Length: 617
Image 1 (cartoon, one colour):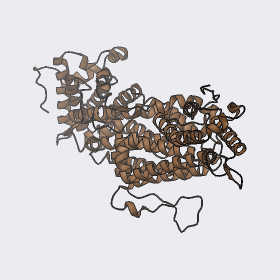
Image 2 (cartoon, one colour):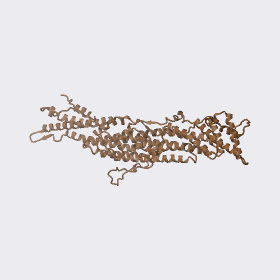
Image 3 (cartoon, helix red, strand yellow):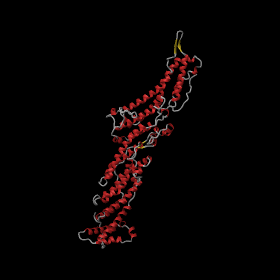
Image 4 (cartoon, one colour):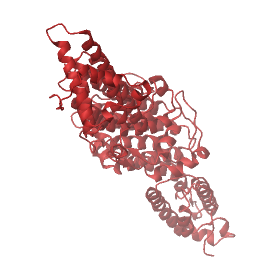
């Protein structure tokens, strides 16, 4: 730096230095050199330059010059601190909000959540396992209005802002140059670091980054942490790309070229504590207890940090800041491992979900809703999870003899789907395995089949409703699932209608003998009574059963009608006249064809409906 130009003065450098030092203490504190006019500032700096020359000269310098120089250094240290303090503020709001709207959101369909959650406590009670029931996780997952997806690429690039006016930067560099030249490097760095660190701390506080230890963070409730994670993701972008980058730029402006890596040393002195504070949060989340509800926020953190990593490598490129760089990479690795672990934990939870209480009417089980909503959200994070999930799931072996684990041979999928797809298929397999076990607790076989039909149909519809999920599951496996719910529907109809249709058989109605042959009216009357009783029982029970999907409900009613009505119409046409010609025919032919058609419309409404007589007299 060229020494400032000053006019000739009769005062010696020592006198100029001592004149400022000889002021009364109160006045000296209030009157700062760099608050004076430029001429006075340059006179003082020129005096310091002259003293440094005198002290550094080859001839023996006098003690007055050394003493005056020490006094000048103490004075310049105060001036340095004062300039910094005068221009130290938390980062401006416009900088804080620059990158705040980069995330997109995916809403969870209300038809899959709110109205069912409101009635879940009335429908079924589930036992809590050690970690807390899956149903509680379902309630939490579906009651959230939205879920942040992994789209952090929208906000990128470093944006440096001026933290201190250029005139102040010039003055700070003038002081730093003279302090460092006089051997006061450590003092200069300490003053700079302490003042600027306070400013960075204030900015972090403004961004909502609290001073919490890893233990403090891990003791917080997950619902509280979710809010803090969203805040952290936003704050981390601003910290790295604006705050830390601007601090680094300012250190270069003031200290670059003044000694060996002085600017790096000042930068590290300033941001080491705040950077550790910032990354401690992500580290605490990465090593927290693994549970399924944490996966998506864990992936949000992973995506945010992954997207920030190139900028972290730029901002913390020097040797002195290597530890921060390494820490960020390690946290990213731990978040990836935690995400893989949580997915495995989720698979275990689905397999071992312990509830044995039947859901009323064979409707959807809360576990089915929970699992399918969960893997639908997984598909939203497809790009991230494709990178993280690189191995197929650990499955049961058909030769292991473990009856608590479904068999699955992934050889049929080899080379066709990704490891992530295999995990999703495996989750659906173990969900079905669990549902099959739950279906066995229904005493009525028809209701058991209806339960499987409802739940597998829901699985199929959720897959079809998500293009991403359908692509990962694949059409071949989707066909298998479709076939499974259709088989369950057929099994339900067979077990339900076989007794009804058995009453409409011809066998046993005809009599023959040596004197006469024809229809046994007594047998016919018993057959009509048996049909009436059987149909009334089916109607009574199955009106209370449920098929929540409107289209499936209508298809099932049509199928039942197509089987029962033609058989009844034919039976009535062939044998009705034998009853009508007798006494009290209304006691035996209680229902017309139209009565039965209307009665079938009561099926699967989920509540009791009385069977109305609409028979024409």
